[in-house]
Length: 404
Image 1 (tube, helix red, strand yellow):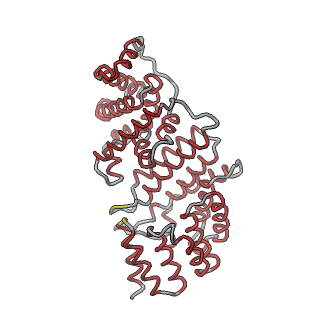
Image 2 (tube, one colour; image 1 turned 90 degrees about the vertical axis):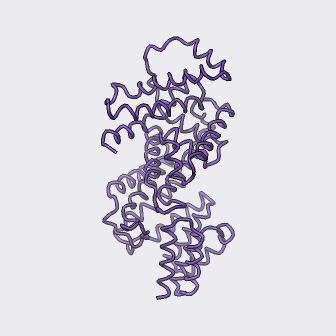
């Protein structure tokens, strides 16, 4: 991809939700507006690298998308009433609204009626500016399947009658929680892909960080938004050291910390340091604080595990998430010994019986305790349960090392 094309792609992703918001305010039809925006983005991606950027890129996109939408409405007899509405409006004088409705679009894509998978797909397309093909590729499913998922999500939003506005003060906490959860899921899938040959899908984790930055810019006083952004930065800072040249996994304790992104760590630590005193403290802030402790350690042996254990105690009081309990068990083992950690894993057997990570953690703690036979079996079980090729290879290597 040429530098001009790359710059165009970055700009289009930034402008996509703003253009969609402008069309929503004018026409109040999410499905038609989103389709029109996608067509305008395609036209810009084809024309701008060769012809150069227009004087006002956002206005150019809004005008092109508006023309596309008007054509759609005129050609669809089932939408006759909307066609009449558009026809009754005065001709555009070229003025473009200054309102940036990115946040409104983000809240709409994370509609309470949508399942997480649908909300993720719609957010990546409508707010992230990714094509259906790109999203399908990231999640390793056929493009047609992803297109159907996005189409159903748009229809769900349309039929809900949800007004195009920010949630009220009463609605906002729950809706914001959903928005942050969707961004968190996108980041997690990018940082550790659930399936496929690659450990990471950088395009997804990078997009999640970009959207979290946008949310933080628009909601600077929301401490959990800052906490989520800090969490992403502090975790993603370790990405360069997570894999070897051949793509194999490098566990945290063995990573070359000189390869960690110091600027991202500094930014993440500053964000969480500013957010925590503001309160109320939420789970993303606590997770960010935990990762800040990891990132600030000069080496694995220097990690302040007692502080991490205490923070996991706080996190468990905020959320009843089995993965949090699993990580709490690891921290307890690092402070009090593997027997303590193994005891804390027992209550999780039913909740996480099908998840490879429970077996991987149990194997690691058994290995710490010197029970190599039991650790070997647990590593094999974990390897058979994961759908990630790099994780499977790593777990098999750990098992094989116990038989050498």
